[in-house]
Image (tube, rainbow, N blue to C red; front, side, top):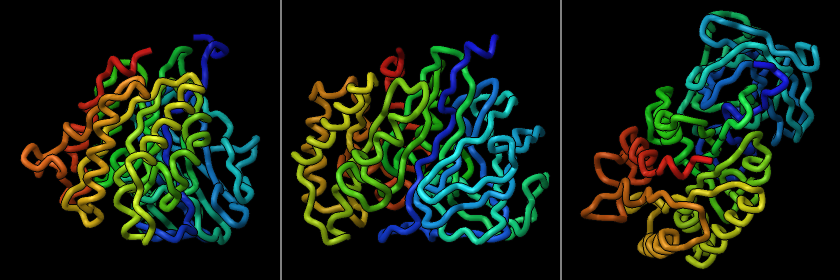
Length: 369
């Protein structure tokens, strides 16, 4: 195929948060004269790719001394305007030069970044159900890493673009931990988004879930309405957006000493998301708010608001379609709770079977162009 007819499409995404937030579910960290190796599981493939690195929430410039990728037995150095080294200013992002190496959907792209200088706390994805491995010195080309540490997180990366055929359809799963994958088996690619991609015959879905993220208020990551332009609308080849929000809006205020969120406020927030999506020419699919009764953050008042908002989601014409996650994973004998066979054990997150059930609630016809 003539390369001039190809388009850049989002083949992998990971939503990042500030390491300086007050509410943290993992330990932020920095690096100095260390290599970080991380697995990026590609939702989509193409004839070439480029990697997106970030210093979005850094307070000082971030120096990348060397970078490389491996896909299977193939390895390639990454360059930045032809140079092997780059400095990413505080608050900025960079895109590597394209790598003329075909990659397939479902492949693992292994990214190695060498940080020669003290970085300070690094912008990260905090609960990705995948580990980063850390080793001393510059090990970006080492086939096996003499790692000294492994951390469940991703650091300084936001995504991979792939050079794909025109008309490629990309959806984004925009939401909270039920997309990011908390509760599923680490390093197994058993997130709900992974299961959805295994069902799709055409196109794919990239993951922009943030565990703890909220629709209406900042806390763990910027709230959905704040990050929508950057984490959704900026994405190349995007056609659809799937949303799952609400659990953290209802559960976190009590823990943080904030006033509770009302059903009306959540409805207004969902309407605003839909308006933004439609204004950009996207189709939006909304999930009902998953059950979380029995979890430490649940309250009778919050669960009552969940039921009220879910009734609205199921009957409104605000969205192009709805996938009823709440019914798909609920305990039929106690609908405010996750079915015991689908519960990760904390009453608030899905295990592998639950993530598969969540993905199964999506009607694939609703993701067709």
